[in-house]
Image (cartoon, rainbow, N blue to C red; front, side, top):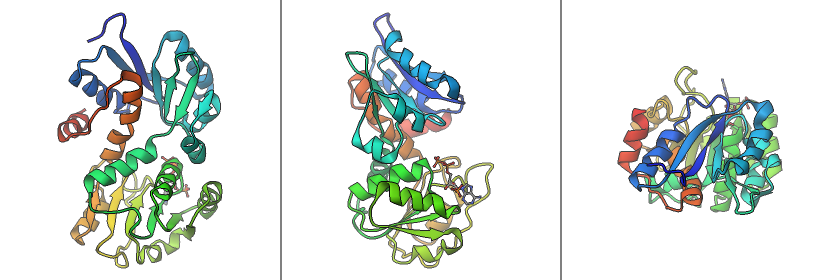
Length: 278
Ligand code: ATR
């Protein structure tokens, strides 16, 4: 349903053809009978700032920003919230009434909401968390866990310097481990999260022995293609609670949708099925 008064949002990325966000927001728009649209916006890196600046001129309510623009977006908006500045990236932009651009980051929110929904009795304060990887996703997750009271965050990355930089930039109870020490980092952990690309379709599997991970630990993979990664399958077989990565994508979309279209959307089983079918 779209009239000439419809509100328009979208996702800016390069490439953007693989993005599930148009399908996801399109589902909510239809469900709530909203006069609006959410469109894919393929924008080359060299055109990113100009495209962003055009949004108020075109009457957009805002956009999501995805790979490879999230870091550039932080520098290109007029205002950003403290969370996006700590992460060093913006994934949600709201066009204010005066035409200025406001940057936010809902990736950490989406991560935590996914764990809360998938494992309601797990608590981020319960013990150390182990993050595999030190890219943009790890940054957002580290900030979310720190703010939720996680007492220690162990950063395990192939490139140790990148993990050290992440810890120094954000500041907090971080411990850095090299890739060769990844199994050792699991002792007494209450959460294990894979933020690397390992285990994704077409990528090598994550090679990690879980023997020293306590059985009470929650295991999450932010990879959602496949939905059940080899890591999650192994963890499930050992008796761990596991949460897949699709929910992070779905939950991170909620704040943007609410800001642009004025309705708080819900993440449901039907939405999960709909997004997976696309
Ligand atoms: P994102 O921003 O989505 O988190 P990214 O910045 O490309 O993605 O980060 C990918 C992560 O996967 C990094 O931590 C990367 O390790 P490096 O920092 O050493 O590059 C990790 N990764 C990718 N391939 C890997 C592999 N074969 N072995 C170990 N780690 C790998």
